[in-house]
Length: 187
Image (cartoon, rainbow, N blue to C red; front, side):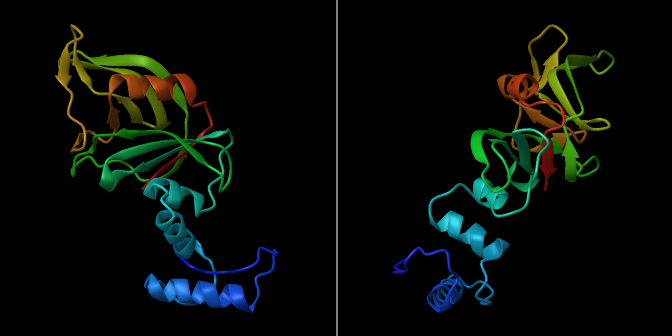
C-alpha cells in the first residue's frame, strides 16, 4: 500500500480516495467507508493473524480482560487479553469440534463454571480441566481412559458430542487463567 496521507485525524477527500482505491484493489464493496470487512482486510494485509483481524475489526466487549474466540470450521480456539478492538492474542489452540449429529453450539456466551474434570465410567473415559460456556457445552481436554492413558487424543476433527476438545495443557490454561464472565464467541 503506497498511500501518502498526513495523519491529521480528518477523514477528508484524500483519505476517502485512498479507501476507495484500496477497496477496489481488494475487490471489496467500494463505499469509501472503513467498515468491518475493509478493516479486517487491512489487518490481514498488514500481517495480522486472521483470527486477530476478525476479532479486532468487530465490536466485542467482555466483562473481563479476557475473551475466547473459536472458529469452528478452522478448528481453532483463540485466547485474547485486552479490551474492545484492542484484543491481543495470547494463545491459539487446535481443537476438535462436535460431530454433525451433535454440533458445537455457535453464538455469544460467557464462562460459567469450571472443574478439574469428570468421568463417564460406562463409556470408559474421563476428561480434565473443563470450562463451561453454556449448559453442557464445555472446553475440556482430550479424552483419557479411566487409568489416565489417552483414550482419544485427536484434534482438528468433528468428533465430539458438541464440546471443544483441547490438549490437556491447553484446557488447563483456560481453566486456570480465563475468568468467570469472560466473553466466549463461537462461529
